[in-house]
Picture: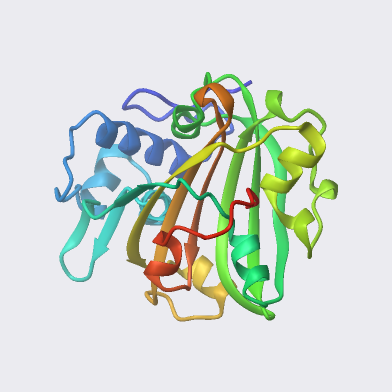
Length: 258
């Protein structure tokens, strides 16, 4: 198992991408308060000099943190630590899957990747596990009536869901839902979730998947789901081409599927 860089120095001897090591260092500095909400982070040139890497590496590292909702690009001004977040504890926990199906839309899910990795530091923090533990990571594209509406990244501790793989999920129906799989296959019920939502302009890779122009306004939503004893079951983050109140309104269904 390969550790992720935890110091301010990059370790060029390990097979972990430099952009990812840079993003982890910046993440730690944001989490520890070196950069406060609203603060500008150093410019691309300053970060290039600090880490002795290419401009492309810095751009990818910053884009990774923008996708996670930690940074926000301001055109012609720079990049700041995100201050605009909305946190909601969902008492009536419903899923994207159920919302769409109950509304009469045809929801379809394309799994873009699914594999196991050693938990990166920031994901381990969300899941409240050790950095050395294994997790599942999945990226998926959600389509409503065959129109792409969201790109999601999802993470869960491997120890909670032994034997889970992409073949368990289906492209349509309830078995595209992680919550449904939790309950049906493992007897685990999601008890609550905490959502964080913020607006941003979509990055180029996600824009291509969603068939929109880079910079198109989207909602970035992250969600930590919890089971019994307040144990985190999964962490997900995604960009959505949907209206804000759709994500924030309490659902009138109690079905726990995601």
